[in-house]
Amino acid sequence: MKKFTIITLLILLGGGLNSKPLPTKFGHAIIIDTDCAIDDMRAISMILSRPELKVKAILLSDGTLTPNKGAEKVISLLHEFNCDSIPVACGDTLMGINPPWRKFNEGIDWGSNVYQIKPNREAYPVLDEILKNSSEKIILVCLGPLTNIDYLLEKDATLKTKIEKIIWYNDAVKPMQGFNYECDKNAVSELIKFDVRIDVISNLHKTDMVFDTIYYELCKKSNTSLGKIIDRVNEQPAVLERIQLGHFKLNDELVSIYLTNPELFDMNPMIPDVNVRYTQDYNSVAVNEVFADMIEGKYVAGRDIVFNSFPMQREMFTYDVRQVMDSAIARYGYDEWKANVMTDEFHGHLGVFSIVGAKMGIKAREYFGVGPDVIEVVSYAGTRPPYSCLNDGIQVSVGATLGMGTIRVTGDSITQPMADFSYKGRSIRITLKKEYLDKVDADINEGIVKFGLMDDGYWKLIRRNALKYWLVWDRNKIFDIEELK
Image (cartoon, rainbow, N blue to C red):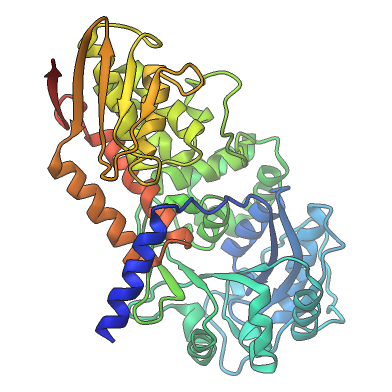
């Protein structure tokens, strides 16, 4: 077993030399499964408001409300969004489920028209039909118990190949606990055995994650469909009273934000069931900002690789980059900030060595006291990732490009994050110090062992580390510099 593990690790490390980040997918086909708590209403509304998210059906599970009662709420909400064509189907009623908050949720209208009708379709055949006929994999967004999905796979386990992942809200994983889990514990344990990817999102009891009067005022002023529809629900006296008391935690809303902005969540595999990921932490400031921008109509779904013009407005940047923006500019100046931003867009993803390259290039320009486009470079980072990513940062920050013939990459068999910079007969060699290189190598190996190279968890870890080093690594401290004769 030990030999197998070592061999596998070596294969992964070898593959990493030519690995590339997984392509970001902005359009998703989704089936929502809900038990219709009021935070489900907000979460579903967030999804319905996003044109890049295609909702194929909404299923009802027993939990906060019974499936039939929940269907009335969902049909009303779909009408508000002009999405009446989305199928609504009910799962089974579970024995012994009657939470104390059911009466409150039964009294809340999700739309201006209240429909007291029962959908003539059941959850299993709808789910079965959509998965079998879909040409793309489906994400199952689960805001209640996992009963319907477990029932499906118990009937036909081959359909797990049509499921991209299950994103499920539950209070905790280690140990497994929470209302959604308690409703149907057996469904959770059985689904884990099917080896389907499950991402479990949790609030983690963060005190700043509340749908409070600030959100109430945002919805009140909003001209978006999302803001207006949530505002109509907020104005119901029982709801408004609880908002003013700070009663509503942001729970299921986090699932919708994870769907659109997974980079804001730190997900850990559950050992030994590595197909299950759970929330270890998340950027609560950025998550609140995403939600607010959606309500106000400022949210931008796409992330361009090439800018039409270089932005300085905070809202132009991705939500996790915003968190380091002010501090990075204050510490290292506008030139380094711009070089790093342009490097990441040019490079195609946010990586540590590309950022090191940008910092290295800015340091070389400072050393010679010159602007861009006048320094010649010889890089020893090679042409294979991860070290070769250094070259992109150098090209952007120095302006020495392959097209201009002012940068050359040596063919040495041993590569390292090091480059020679020359200007008017003077040359210096800049090398990333060993302690910093060892840290990056350890981080990469941790990601490979934890997730494997072809997993989005690996690339999210790389992005998170890159942001961290962008902010904390000072270009005046991380390099060895020597004059060359």
